[in-house]
Amino acid sequence: MSKQTFIFNPEHDLCIANGDENFVPPRSAIGFANANTDLSEKLKRPNKQRRQIVPWGWNHSLKKRLINDGIDPAFLPSEEELQFIHIHSRREFALDVHSKLISDAPQVIGPDYRIVASSVSEIEAFISANGSAVLKSPLSGSGKGIRFIREKLSESDEGWCRRTLAKQGAVIVERRFEIIKECAMLFECHQEGIDFIGYSLFESRNGTYSKNILASNQEIESLIAEYIPLDTLIDIRKDLTAILAHTLVGHYEGFLGVDQIICQTDFPVFIPVSEINLRMTMGLIARNQYDYFG
Image 1 (cartoon, rainbow, N blue to C red):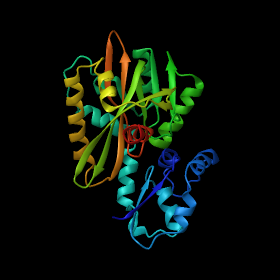
Image 2: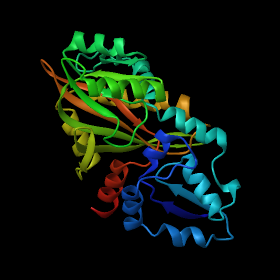
Image 3: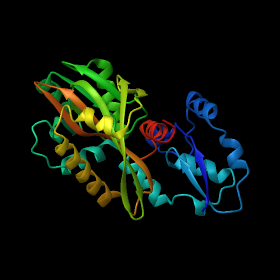
């Protein structure tokens, strides 16, 4: 079995959003990574034996950095694989997967709670019809690229929208809900298919990740089932696995998480696909921590 080298590069989302292999992440992101893993020593002494490199997430910037540190490009993702990750890291992919999920359960919200806007007028029309909204850039780092709007766009909001439209071609506009719980389904994609790993239960503040709750898969599943029928949840899990396998297998190898939200409307409802992260997640770390170390 080949030796595995794990790379903690939490600046991944920022690199994906930028897209330039020469992008230099902020010092805060690099400092956070250096404080949590000894990356430099692992890269400066490449083993002659073939090793499997497992980063937090693959992007063009990391690949260039590894090549500069002497890693054989044959051990790294191809340009086609990196481009696939880049495209499917956009929030439109989550909306596309959501649109393929079919559920007649009244507790499950369909994909029409959000739109992909290509103009400021579309954004303004959505806000006018819904009273408030959440604006998201198609690509962004955790907590970045998200704006919460009430009633109308401010001058600052409109400027942000125009810049995002010019740079990324779209703005995701969502109805704003009162969040009850945030959770995720965790998967691993490999050449043979996709495996469901388990659940994650987490908290965020204004779109920024805050913490994970350590709990068993059964406990998290039971908690979610307090709001939607367990049979519905299991059907969603099976359908998600099949939809993701159809798109990802043969193009992506690694971990991914599908963020989900339980919201309060007239009654509790479930958003089965809020975000899709084609990378390692804190939920996967929490899952491993609980399952293997208690």
